[in-house]
Length: 393
Image 1 (tube, rainbow, N blue to C red):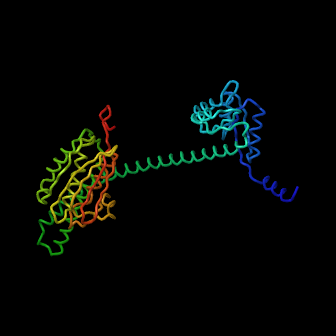
Image 2: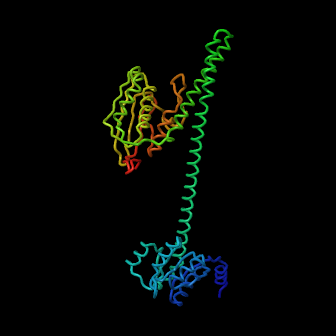
Image 3: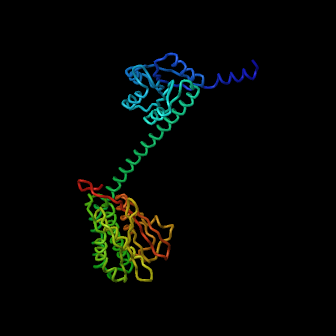
């Protein structure tokens, strides 16, 4: 033997072998030996348990940790496909490869459709190692994917609990802070009324700052409480006529509409399965913002809707000052403002409340706008119908 051949054999001998635990369902000892030889010749260090019927197979599953099952299709008292029933019954994810003397294409496809990983004919055992490697690789990828899904679900649960805790904290904090802040606001107002002009000029200025700050804090806390209340109470779902909601909002915002000369129009709107109070909040905030952030011309506001497969897509368009694209996401963050309070009043809570209501309903909200070119706020509401108990579908 040449030196090169000796070196090649040496490298092959030194090559690490893959350990493989096989559960072999076979009634012919010679065929079983041929199967194992094919694996060993291709780099597997095989340990095996040979079984012939269901009882032996079930016992072997509990006593040996098999990585792959190789099963003959036809056995005297059992069939290879019945192996799948046992694996499913035991809740085990172990690749099962059929190793048969003869298996038609139609039968092979049907076996794979029922859950067999693959099949190898006994006169083509040379391809068995590759089939086993692929089956083990797919199982590993499947296990990694399942673990990732479990980890993601766990993180989602943790996030949901964290959000619930934060909402509870915001609710309790804002609710409990109202009373002491009410006292601060009342007494600073009393100081302002009783001692204005009786102290020096700085004292009047400082008392004014304190009174203004207390009143602003009251409004902030009330807004925070309103935000935290979204979703806390059970929503009263029913069919809500959006046309009637728009007319109700028109009355609520009557003073602002008259003062600004706003024109509010709407298309024929559908009745949707939702909570009426929350739907009113959405339209009141969006239409109110269209009036507040108006340009030099009187506001022109149009409410429209379209049916898009599983959702209603509502839009509220205006001819106001618009929003630069880079701020299109920031405006939905609680207490996020793009203008000073001296320019436009408010605390930046309205759009955050809209977003929270809509997302809890399974929809989404966004804005299409450019600075000085008006805005179109769009949001989706799922096409839901009530279930038999009158709740959400």
